[in-house]
Image 1: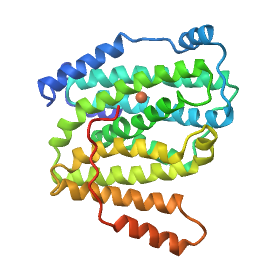
Image 2: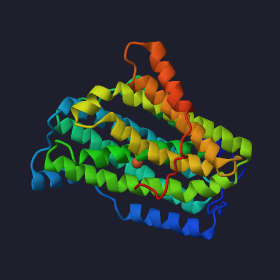
Image 3: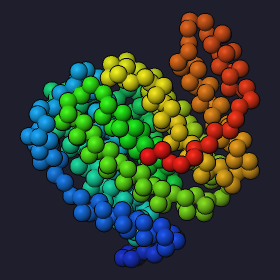
Image 4: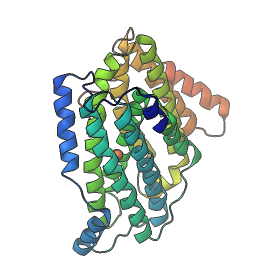
Length: 314
Ligand SMILES: [Fe+2]
């Protein structure tokens, strides 16, 4: 980041960027919301514990592993949003991601404190889940960073916090997950405020490249879910439930990216087929590899109605 700053010829204190007025207003509003919501993580937990009693869960080890994953995701999101505050060309976009960087720092400290109070260590995520976070963290392309962070990692975190509120956890944890969920909705709004205009300005080759990158990321995310399966089940989730919710959110981005790439229906169908194939190979292996592969291919190649995202699911 410092090298990039030094390479600049001059500092532009009020960059106008290339966003339309409506998007700029929306992003400035998100920044104001974040700036007015400066909560202290430890105080939030103390208040919740005073109101609802100590934090506890029926499967603390499994919860610890998933909360550790959320902590890794927040730590990556903190750095990515701070980087975007330098890289994005419009001042309102920079303001919105700056507010997000503050939120992510709070999330890291909130999750660290929660794990401590549950008596659980901060563990390293399973390899595929870690790879997804690392790929988004490593990219220096702002379009990939926005797609990977705001419309893939954040919706996954949101799905987890939302689902956890109906599971076997103490009322204090439910209140905590609600706090986290509210902030994640704001973060997704940042991506939705910047990405559509940015994507419209990309060449068709760049759009195709971004769509392919997103598909690879989603397939790796599915491997990550498979590796997390025992912990997901221990918490009372059906892994397919998580996958279905996650998938519906990813399709919004596919739709956005493929609108100008020839036939968007064919593009989103290809995305669905690839996902279906991966799902069958990961989740339906019954010892007969040849039969699993044949069945998976049959289903992936069968005619189907094109899926459509419809209204945003959050
Ligand atoms: Fe976030």
